[in-house]
Image (tube, rainbow, N blue to C red):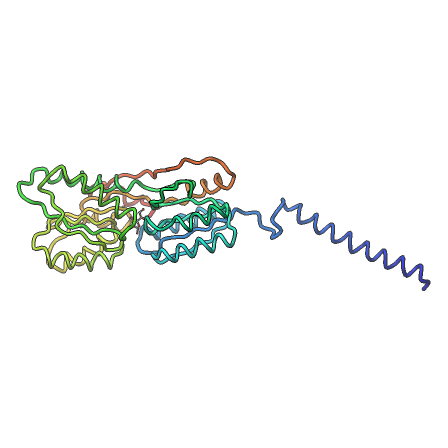
Length: 331
Ligand code: GZL
């Protein structure tokens, strides 16, 4: 074969390789300007408090189902109720260059440094469920969640109405949520403000049960040993109230009759206890934040303005209302 014809073959072969390469590159761009990894989905990094209660389980389910429905890629982390795990997860999300970060802060304080890191990395942050006490509101785009002071106030107002004819002291014990958390701080505040209307209503003991059934049972056992006359239990969530039921029955008292029980959340097991007469009143706190969160993620990713505060809608339940509502409860 002459040198000339060999050269022509080599050039033709090289041209073929170059042409194939450029078509492959075009092929990638035809898939809609992806980042080269073939994936143009919004990527959301979510740091969840843990799995401490029925409410939390329902909240996690709502978030995971809503992300799948919205076509949003969810990187989900369970912090097992430890702030240091949430901070670590948020830093990982920053390193992975997610599009948006959302989280439910286990406690109110200690977030400014890591939220500043997210801001410097130009990754928008959404608060869901619980708030932070940062003075710098530019560290997050919005807070989607309940008004916990209102929940505590509604619980207190119901009790004031129930006990308005009481002639003597009404002794209340209080199972607080996780120490330092927004729901614990705010439900305590709202309840105390409401019962101040009747000086007979006295909180004789108040301690954290950490939002868990085990914590509620353990602390209620202590309350029962230390306080001969307990008329009312105010538990910051259903799960602690459900744990307390075991301690109350073990002490030979009838929950819902010997001790009036008021809780917050309205998860299925709590509503069942209410319908069965073991609880007396529940202030609802909806965990179904997933759909609203995904809409906010899309808006924030698109650079659209969102309200600084979005309050979830909720109600309250008496024993009769719980019987009616139970068949249709989603969680
Ligand atoms: C309230 C949420 C609380 C629930 C508890 O929005 O943060 O945490 O009331 C849960 O059941 O553990």
